[in-house]
Image (cartoon, rainbow, N blue to C red; front, top):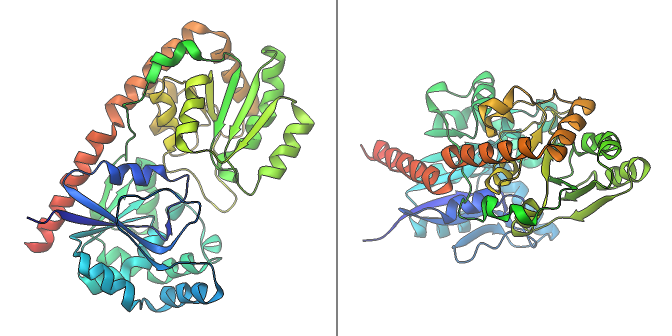
Length: 382
């Protein structure tokens, strides 16, 4: 008997920061994943041993023109033929923008489409979505997407509320956490922690709010001499952030883009992780930051602004004490408390690990996802 197949679709295969997509695919047990997209990224995640299909294979001008033509017309005979030979039972697209790109393929193959909404796809304003060919395709096809898609998976209740406000059909929205691998060391690594390290891990873009953490370090350093800020990640704001750090606090280390395994090692070494996410000027905001779950899985206490989508990653009793978005003084004071108070640190560490085990276990969450896959395929063939 042939295994059931799910086609995992992302326009770009697969950004290094999107380990959550690959981890979910790797955790599937009843469905065999294969990947498809507009192009493979040269520095992307290793998708071995999964079958991978892409519309184009380079950044040559002609290849870019092919991608733009596909986004306008939905025609891609060679790619559709290759995917048809694979006979997937279901297509799972990540992000609504990407789903609108694969929509013509799903229709041509007559395969049910499931879409995960992660955040920016239901939070960015329309002006921002007019900037790129992929997002313009989304604006053209979104109502068609609402009608054809059988299930929209929302990574948080916040994402569900935003999708509902935009017009996504309520009966098709399902809140489901992707989950993370909990087989790592967790709190057994606590004896190796450096009590002076403050860690930031994420893309250096506006919504991640790293500049607020850099500014908060002024106050932290006065209360905790020798504290160090480690920044793991890269992005368009790196030079701006480096300049800000140089003018405000001396001991800031910019590691650049790091593989997930290296980030998890830093989580095992650090005293706190700070994720001061905010809503960007274009409306972009977090769906549910995976980094908060990964840190808590390592027994690392996390500090964040009370930005929509963020509190759902934390235990309920932590949510009330989160500083308001942009409150640098309150952010600094929370860092100081967890760096100086060992008893509080341990309580927060233990509570965070328990919360992740209860709500974000990758194996358990993926089992629920596959149950939904089974339901979806049963609906279609009923």
